[in-house]
Length: 120
Image (cartoon, rainbow, N blue to C red; front, side):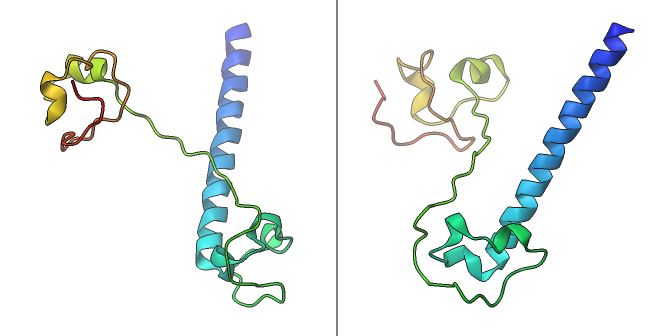
């Protein structure tokens, strides 16, 4: 019984998180389709939060960089060197024979790293 309740709570939390992500993506699409994308007042706009469609005309619009930039969290997963060594994918570029490979946390793109200040 307790595990069912935990599963229900977990699925509800996951559903809420998915809804928030969906709403955030929709808001970003709305901003990019609107006049707001290069407005000085983007960070503290009162009309954008109530908008249902792209804003094409605004009395407060001033072209320029936002005074209060909108910050957003970017979820990015990087594979570590350890994980890539364990996988069947072969490393390309300088990483193949770098002495810092085991402790390196820099991103390793599929095409290889060809310039690196940490290469030893």
